[in-house]
Image (tube, rainbow, N blue to C red; front, side, top):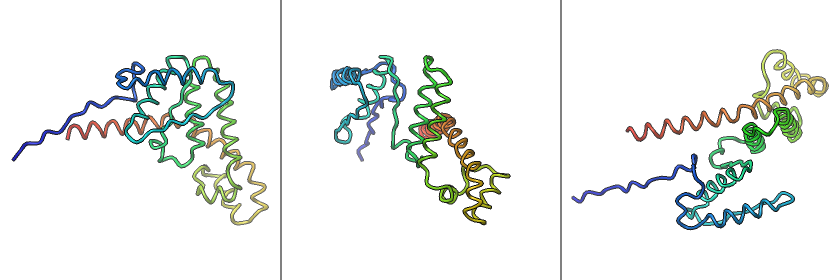
Amino acid sequence: MTEQNQLNWQRTNLDNIEQAWEGDLWHRKRLGVQLTNYVDRLNCGAVLALDARWGEGKTWFVRHWKKHLEDENHNVIYLDAFANDYLEDPFLVISSEITSCLSKDDDVDQSHINTFKEKAAAAYQALLPSLPKVLLTLGLNLISGGVLGTLAQQAYETGEKVIESASDEIGEKIKESIEAKIESHEADKNTLLAFKQELAQLADKL
């Protein structure tokens, strides 16, 4: 019986790139520099689409370009839709990532960060459907207990009149909860990352 040896490929740690374009076998740095020069000349927003078949290095390029941009003193957010697919709302994810990015920039005043969080929460609240549907859909998950929970329950029981009188107070609590979610996103992400790392170490030991 012939013994089969499993190939042990050295995986690149794309989460902690120390030097941009290190191991660039396909000379992708040139494209990264060209795109950086293009972005620097933009006077308004733009969308760039990177297209390639599976396994041809899109993730490698984007991660190294992110490091390159950071080295050029650009604020960069890398948002992996697959890694965040357990979160249902992309608006909250994007807002949280922007907040986290701004918090790491020493040149950004904390008051600006707080203002952004407040505006993001207000915008998200405006995007939500009407209050009764919000309460029904979220199952009061964003609503704390006590008096507020009672108000929400009364809104269902007594109809639109109570909803109108309670909506301002409930809406403010929803806004506060959204701000708290934005604030805690980075900690939640790090918790999930720590779990993945522990799981990988456990797999190696077994």
